[in-house]
Picture 1 (spheres, rainbow, N blue to C red):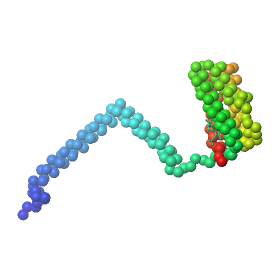
Picture 2 (picture 1 turned 90 degrees about the vertical axis):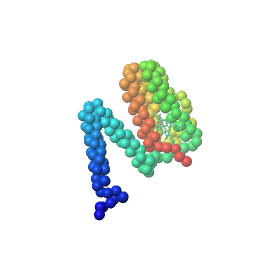
Picture 3 (picture 1 turned 30 degrees about the vertical axis):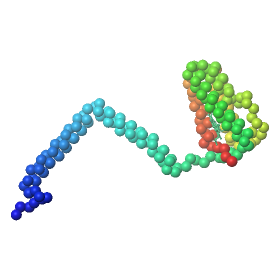
Picture 4 (picture 1 turned 60 degrees about the horizontal axis):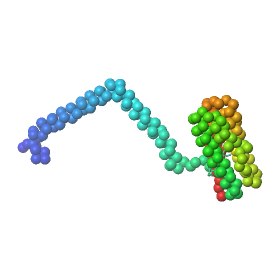
Amino acid sequence: MMKTFKGASINSIKPMMARQNAAKKRSIDSYVSILSRILTQPARLQWIYRSALKTLGMLLCVMPMLAWAEGEKAPEREVMKLAPEHEAHVRYEMRGFLVSLQGINEALAKQDFEAVARYARQSGASAPQAAPRGLGKALPPRFREMGGATHAAFDQLAVDAQTMGDTRVVLEQVSGIMKQCIQCHAAYRFGK
Ligand code: HEC
């Protein structure tokens, strides 16, 4: 008796399987030929390499963020407890720093070194806004030191911008000042 498979005889299945195998082989062949065409065209190769590099770059950017989100805490900063009027004044000065940096950038783009100096001096050591009484004593010595250095750096930038009028020098000084912002922000915060 003839073996049957789901109602069809083995003989009737054989040609079907042969057709399927042939189709499979054709599709593999066409994959191979497409792949070899892609890989032998320099423009496409370049595109592939570039996409691969872009993906790798994105992964490298995103991975540290994921690590951060997964519970790596920001490093602890020293908490400063100041009287409300002292804290308000420090914050006011901070916002002045930001205004100066923006003004310096804008003036620099116009190559207006007088304006660069003017914006820098607004955050210099002799900036007009008077500090409330007792603020100096209330600040940790290292904080005072870093704050003083930042004011002094703005004064230096003002002098150099006026005397040299050199964009590169100003940019370097701005970058140095911003490092000071970063350092202090990494070290201190206000708290109750
Ligand atoms: C000597 C330390 C120190 C330096 C230098 C410093 N900051 Fe700050 N800044 C702080 C602290 C502390 C805070 C408050 C952080 C908090 O909210 O707890 C602050 C807050 C600020 C704020 C928010 C102000 C607000 O109204 O809340 C801005 C804007 C700012 N800083 C800009 C700057 C810029 C720009 C520079 C550099 C030119 C700079 N800071 C340099 C210590 C510093």
